[in-house]
Length: 189
Ligand SMILES: [Zn+2]
Ligand SMILES: [Zn+2]
Image 1 (cartoon, rainbow, N blue to C red):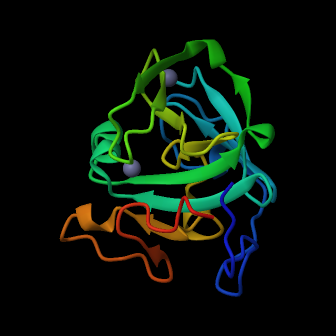
Image 2: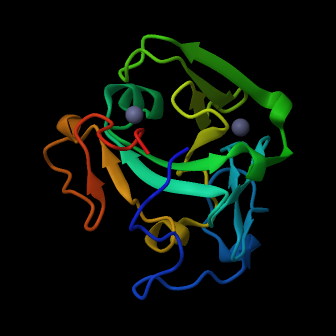
């Protein structure tokens, strides 16, 4: 279990509180427009819309938020870093499409060779989350599929950055985020 001593998951003075949003109030991305967010939860939808999940955006269901620059995340996200939320499985659920997931596991991960399973939409290829030995009872939800993009500017702003030694040189550190070489203290809580 990851806890965050000294780091609050509640909205801070510089973070606006979450207003409920749905439908056309959310940016158009992918083929569906039925995502939503409220003060406690938000949806994440794959590009084709077959899979929609509901994620906690507050403690205790939301454990932390982080950016990972590791070589695994680069490859799996088809980008040069990944934005993630660690959520408790007990607080994370499917609206639809769990049967559309394809699971791909690898044991030769960058972090101590601990097995990680990647969960994709089998229709459109969106990576919804990663799950593995590093965090039993939790999953690392990908931030990109979250329908309310504004949440990344407010309560889902990254609290940690890990594997910063792999960060592309043109990306500055996230202000206020804990910076770790490798996983650092991230998995020692
Ligand atoms: Zn899909
Ligand atoms: Zn990573």
